[in-house]
Image (tube, rainbow, N blue to C red; front, side, top):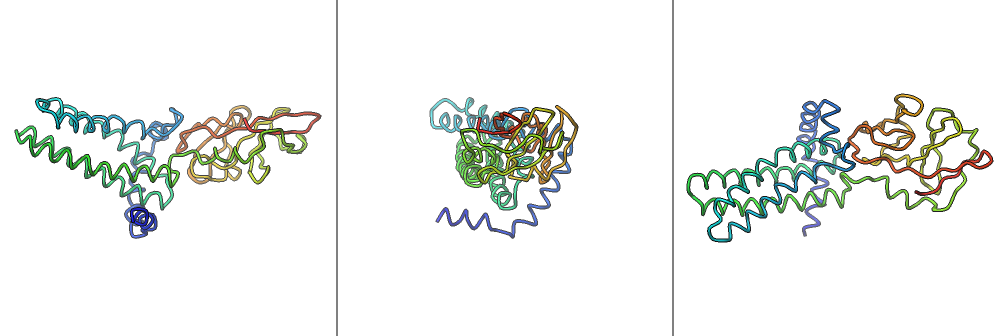
Length: 284
């Protein structure tokens, strides 16, 4: 029954009007590339949001344990206050990530965010009750908040592990490529200083030639699977980057380094070898 409910949620098109309006608001607020890269976790090498949620989750779980023990009111209240304050950066990172997801992912993410908002409201109510001396009510509201947050966490896990949000979707393509060297073709047939696409064992590979050097990466963007081969190229030479046409993730062509998000990780690259003017590639 739970799986059926999640499946219906993924297909709940009634959420789309709200989702699209909120997406526009988030994108307007987070216009700065630096801010988006910071919140996406581009500098970190993987999404920042899962890292930031550890503080409130840890604080709330610890407070739940202390609330069950005698003489720990002050410590539990302090932890709930810390956890509630720590939700702010986690929320900011989560919304920025959410704004670059596909429709079905945004539907689940919207309910995930709503559940977490309700949980935070309950924790704020818990703090208010504790500060006014109603510690019993404070504990009750805190346990209710933890229960709602658990439901929100379930949806977050589904969003990440079942729907692939935040995962590098290009990495599995490496398993389809040969471990041993596979010939691609004559190096001379590749355009100079401009990326081109070749298909190896059903996997599209983006090649970039600079003189006698050729680099290769998976052509499918790691963020949401966009076709990098159709993206624009910024810069030239060693600093040339390809921009995903779907969401703007930017990768340096010579090594797959992520320069701008929403992708948080580098684009998977392949080994290259040139012998007698013939290019071959293999998995890392």
